[in-house]
Length: 138
Image (cartoon, rainbow, N blue to C red):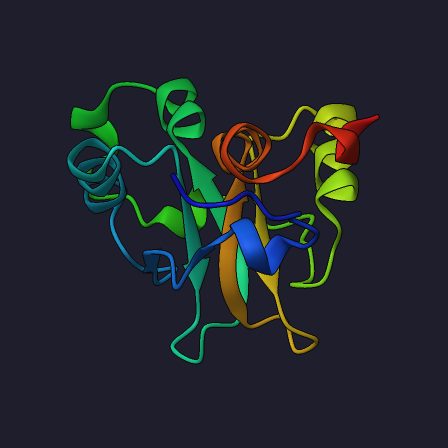
């Protein structure tokens, strides 16, 4: 069993280099990626990894039957106003934002809005259970 260490920032718990899709990718491709990989969110980026949106499995469920949407570009369903974290955002702040706004995931971007990773609620819980001393949360 490895010794525990104090986790402090998004960079320490995020999934680095997450799967991203281009805005012209088809909804069917996003849905397939979510189903095969077990993702609930996919980041939508330009070729230089500039974040332009996010799409969730809930967005797809609410949009209607997949047979009618499969050939629709994700740009038509993605959320374009995305709250992002920086790699040095504290995990306490991440948790606060996710709880306050009912977010299940936050993209992590650099100062130029280029995607560096994603933090999910699962990442926060994993950090609490496996890595962070409980004193961090007192």
